[in-house]
Image (cartoon, rainbow, N blue to C red; front, side):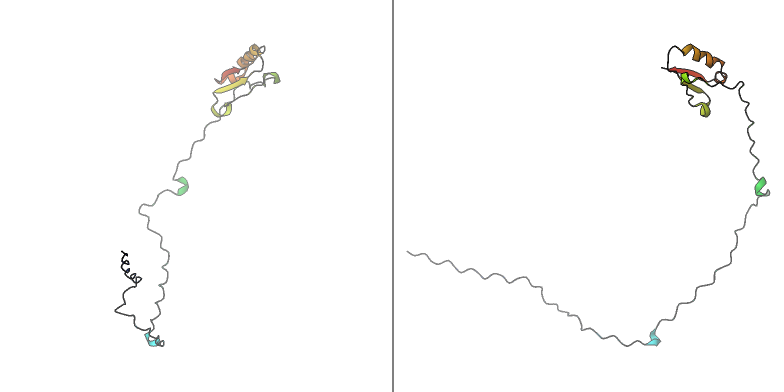
Length: 139
């Protein structure tokens, strides 16, 4: 027995289309000619600038500006320690660190052990010892 042919396929749905607009846009209207009577009036001119008026001082300073502050007293110069420190010999390779800034620490770097006693003796005779500076020897 022969098979029955398959039923025909339904036709594909139509592609999506928006519904028609019930209120179509009106046709464009041509511009009316310019009427000078309808023009806006010109803006008013800006007001003239006001003259400068200083603000009133509620409590004027009775003293002039130069005498409003007392003078700053200058410190008296410190006397130099006498005698001045002798220059160390070149073999000591001495370096003073933080001498001018804090006046509390003087660091001497010694290159050899055999000259250590000589360096300590020079330190005791120098003015750095009188300024309460400390002696540190590094090898």
